[in-house]
Length: 239
Image (tube, rainbow, N blue to C red; front, side, top):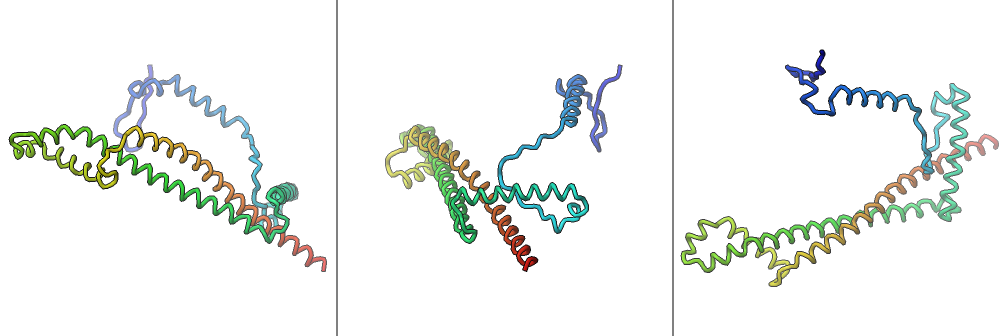
């Protein structure tokens, strides 16, 4: 019977499917192809996330001017987004659009503060990892250094263990400069690292949310400007 095989562009020989494992067996390939076809046939569901969207520029887009139905849809959509824009302002107690920038400044400040705190945490976490590694290296090589200090022929012992002894002195110096004479407790270092890691996870969620808030704010501000321009145009036409 026929044997399924593959050959990529530029490849000289075919590779048999049986050599690629069960994932490339004919039955598995058929199943995946059928699932792919089924997903494509299913209608895509639009999920409204409730966030304010940018107003559609109907006047400067030909496709809306050429289709009455599309234009009607766009106007209804704009009314919905205008309503959401007003609700956004109302929820934050903004009754005058002149105060929109002051409301936005708080969002930017929180975003910047969160980013700075995350950066400081990451720096401290990096320091803890280095310190932990130094302590582990110190403990591992301390017996080698002790043997060197008690060796009858230090020169010979040093030549035989030069790299270990130099590394030991390096980490010893690094620990002494940061901790003094007392060797840090690895358990305490790990506990602090874990606490910082948990704090960082929470801050990342806040950072993600403030990033979304900034995008929403920019959309709100653009919508307000367009609504003001539209209102001014109407007043101008009536006068």
